[in-house]
Image 1 (cartoon, rainbow, N blue to C red):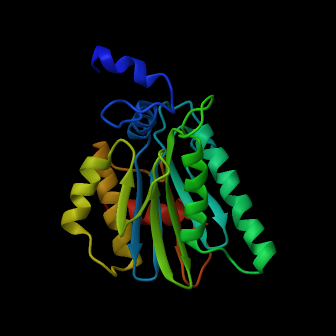
Image 2: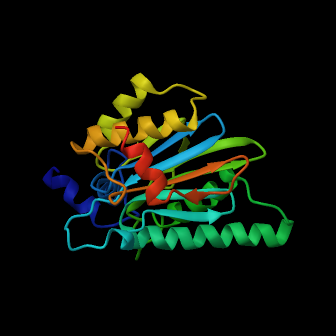
Amino acid sequence: MQPGQMAYDRGITVFSPDGRLFQVEYAREAVKKGTTTIGLKFDSGVILIVDKHVSSRLVEPSSIEKIYDIDEYIGCATSGLVADARILVDEARKYAQTHRITYNENITVEALVKRVCDLKQNYTQYGGARPFGVALLVAGTDDLGSHLFETDPSGALIAYKAGCIGSGRPTIMEIFEKEFIENMSYEDAIALGLKALAAANDGKPTPETVEAGVVTFDEPFRRLDAEELGKFVSKL
């Protein structure tokens, strides 16, 4: 950073002369250093795969939670600051439950993601706070189809057919650009996701170090257990 720009990175509400909010950019850096998180759409739903990044053999892998269920047919995976992610997940659950009580129906995936992004955007606009240092991959199904959304610390959102957040993003997105096929089967989607995760982390994933969740039009969002995940990992 140039010396003249230093004054603009102390306040979240102050734009630099070239139109940048440095605190938001710093929050994006926290996401880039986070765990590798993958999402893929397949013919009947969406799957999320996360590298837990178990840093020590003394850590209980089951205590690391990176995938959360938000509503019956909506789940999300996170990368960045875990505590920030937990707050956003709690708020998303409140939005979903409020919608259900008010309208007696499940909230649509896009409406939920926009509500979460509105909250994230609020924390880029007022002094005395900082942006959320976390990005979310939100997966779900509704009457409009299957959806995979990525949210940004700035409050921006974008829909993907296959996406990635976290430290392994460049490598994984390159693989997806070459090998992703629309309307692939569930088995092919999880195999491609695990293959990309292995390439990004320079090592074969294990059921203990990987977490996955899936949602389809027929089944609510659920996490894959170690036995089911192990069958796919063993095929790598």
